[in-house]
Image 1: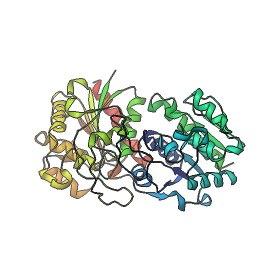
Image 2: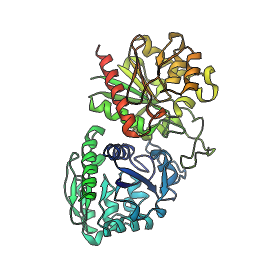
Image 3: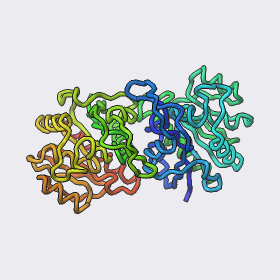
Image 4: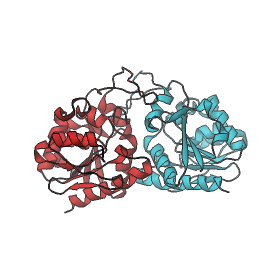
Length: 219
Length: 219
C-alpha cells in the first residue's frame, strides 16, 4: 500500500494549515487507496490569529497539538518521521506553511526552513520520492531545496513569484484547476486558495495533484 | 440561489465541530451551487481538548471564534441569524455538537439545547425548511424538537439510540453510506464518524444528505 506523508502546520488558514486544503488532500488520498502518515513540528506557533477578526490574540499554541485536530489525533512529531517510511509527501497550504514550517512570511527571500521539515524535504527529494505542495507552501519547498532550481507555482501573484525566483526557484503561472509538475525534482504544486475563490475550485487542482503524486510513486 | 445555514460548534472532533464532516458538507453544497451562511453560538466552549493526548487542557476558547477557522472567517453569531434568511440548515457532528450546542454529552436524556440554537432549529422545522444533522448532532436535534417525534439515525449505537428514544425520538439504524429521512419533519441524518471508519466512507453519506436537503428545498 502506498504511504503518503501529510505535513501539517497548525489548524486554520491564518496561523496554521488551511483546513479545506488539508481535508481535501486527505479525502482524495484515501479515495485513491493511499495510507497516510500525519506529522507536524512539535514547536510553538509563530502566532495565534482570531479567525473572526483577523487579529493576533497573543495566545501560545503548539503546532503539533493544533494539527492533531485535522488529523483526528493520529499524528506524529515530524522529527521522528523518516523518508524511508513514505512513498511521497504533501504539504497543504495556509499561513502556517510559511510562518511555522519556515519563516518565509517574515523573512521573504532570506527564509529559513524549520530544520526537521527541511531535512525531511531534502531526504525525500534525494530519494526521488515525489513531494507535493499547495497554495503558499511551495515557498517553503523552494527555501528547502533552492539550489535544485525547483519549478513550482503559487498561482500568478507577481510579487511572491519574483521573490521565489530570487531564491532560486522557477515560477510558473498556473490556474486553480491545474497543477505545475517539476519532473526532474519530482515536485507537484497547485495554487489552491492562493487563487480560489471557492472550495469547489480548489478541489479540482488538489485532486489532480494527489493523482499525479500517486502516479509518480508508481513510475 | 439556495442558501443553506451551517451550524458549527468549534473546530475539532473532540471539543468542537468534526472538521472532515464540516468541510465535506461545505464541498458538496458548493459543488451543487448552494450559498452558505456559517454560524455558531458566541459562547465559551464547554471544554478544550488536546487532540494529541485526548486530555482536557483547562484553556478557555470561544465557540464562534474557533468555528471561524473552518469558515475561513466568514461566520456570524447564530443569535443574529433568522430562519427567513435560509432555505435549509445542516449541523455537522463532532463532540461540540453535544457539549456546546447542547449538553447532551453530560445530561443525556435531560439534555437542554442552547436557546439560540434551539430557537433556530424550531423555527426552521415550523417553516417546513429541511434540517440535516451528521454523526452525533441528531441528539441535539431530538432535544430541540422532541415533541415532534423526530426520526433520526446516529448509526447503530444501542445505548445512544435508547437514550434518543427515551427523549421522544425514533431511532433508525443506518449504514455510513446511507441517510435517514424523516419526510414529515423534513429531517435528514447520516452516521458519518459515528461509524466511519474513514473519510472516504463518511463522504458517501454526507454527499447524499446534501443532495437530499437541496432536493427538499425544491419540492
